[in-house]
Length: 362
Image 1: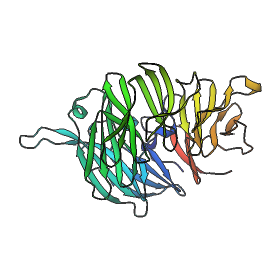
Image 2 (image 1 turned 60 degrees about the horizontal axis):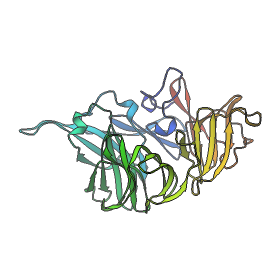
Image 3 (image 1 turned 135 degrees about the vertical axis):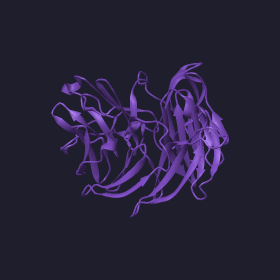
Image 4 (image 1 turned 180 degrees about the vertical axis):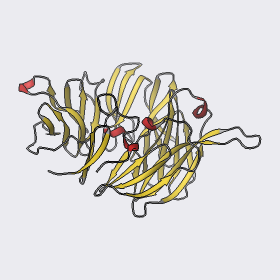
């Protein structure tokens, strides 16, 4: 079944590939449904028959046109899906026009309407910045949802009460990457191109810990309670797995992997790919599990499309393949296609610049 155009609009290149891979698509899989987000709304698609079974729209004018390629996937919070929209606040009286983020909580049960919605006024840079402005719902836990808005070196994060829908706290400069263990963890933009890892209390926004300034820092979620930080620190070069509650290093990543993009398989493994190599690392200890380079043992590394629950999906020389995430061995299951997103019910596959859903098997 084809998904709406919004699922891939502004995402594909001339080779028919999705920039950034499936995890950056504006799509959340939940059971046999897909929540597909555009700059102006969200559609709920039944993947069994392709029907649109729910729809909600943003209440306001879009902040910027042509932002389809910037929309990130929404997140699940209990029985709701949290979708942020970047909107303008019109000029009124003596008040000039501005920008706001509207957070809409869409129910995962029929008729998939908004359970609630709230708006937060954004700083002036969101309206004035020449950089691309992006809003993302990072996650929710214990009644607090986190929304982060970024544009170039500017960032701001908000903690929103999911019961009262009131703004709990604001952290200027903080780009939150992961929510868990009562902590929101991200990069604090302190100087141009320089950030410091920061953990704040989820309920209050109070700083819990702060790491070293890092030049050209990159942070990604690396499993429950863990984030990966790569970059050049003032004292040393680092590529580490940090504990989100303390900011302390749990493990160092193997050397030479700072350029590798790693994805957590939602089980126990980080799968990293770059160029002609695929490497798997234990998400808790940073221990290398296996490496597959071009020509190793007569094998050719696949182009990894997604990883999920101990499996690595990709396109190999002989067609779609599935590898065991812990060993790197080819699995006997022969997939029909290499999905960009997958769960226990369906896989989403790119074909001719459109996403199609297939029943998951094997």
